[in-house]
Image (tube, rainbow, N blue to C red):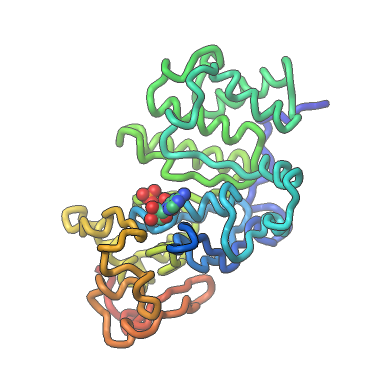
Length: 344
Ligand SMILES: Nc1ncnc2c1ncn2[C@@H]1O[C@H](COP(=O)(O)OP(=O)(O)OP(=O)(O)O)[C@@H](O)[C@H]1O
């Protein structure tokens, strides 16, 4: 078997001939809870993602970003809707077929310390996916491991060392190497810089960008940080309480954002001192003493209770996700009224 060489760039995602999206998510919902009490952590989310592109997902803690990422990868099963990867409906695949597809879909987690086994050398950690997916073994696997370590900016000597011997930034590079070593097409990056020192965050963001180019990767990039998402993503999806508030090209964010929540996030990037701390608080929708839960307001806009532009209909009917132009969609009754206002 000739193992794939990671040194050779594969066809760039953006130039792949067929124009079909790599990933299609249609009305996907995820419910948690039990028979007595359930809540919808992800509510009827739809989007397409083209090869070689990055979709940034932004929203406050608890709005369902991680749940969405995990459900796309079928690490937890959606309660409703469809996930089509390369046109295959993942819910319809057998266990064996899904394992085969998993090679092409990987996740990078926030905390590399908890995602790497401390008892394994880095080399063993990186060789494992090659063995599991029958890609390479022995010297061929060693060569791929060395190439991947260099691709993420580490020396080949790192392969003989253990996780505790590395800094947080180096560990995240190792976690990235492990996610990429089987040459996936889709990678869900779940706040991959959140646990790192600010000085290291930019290096990891640049590395992800470089690797995307080199290997033709398609990313879902989850973050609290709109500045990072804007830098990396082709499109940005703003989530609020499990639903899509707005989705638009990141180049259009400053000029064309219409949802009041998107505008609040933008103003926080421009002027961190203005950040509404409540926007980043953790919310537990299962708690009964929180009065403003969407589950208790089935007919209102979820953002109504915080929205400076809310009017009567916002409390009595939930806005649909409307297309403004092209792929720009927004879920707000008042987007037309806000169109003319300068973004704060
Ligand atoms: N396995 C689970 N069982 C029950 N509730 C869950 C489970 N996983 C997540 N939740 C709840 O679902 C909601 C969405 O959580 P999720 O972790 O997806 O949000 P998030 O936007 O990624 O938050 P953060 O930015 O803090 O990671 C939260 O209220 C969370 O408490």
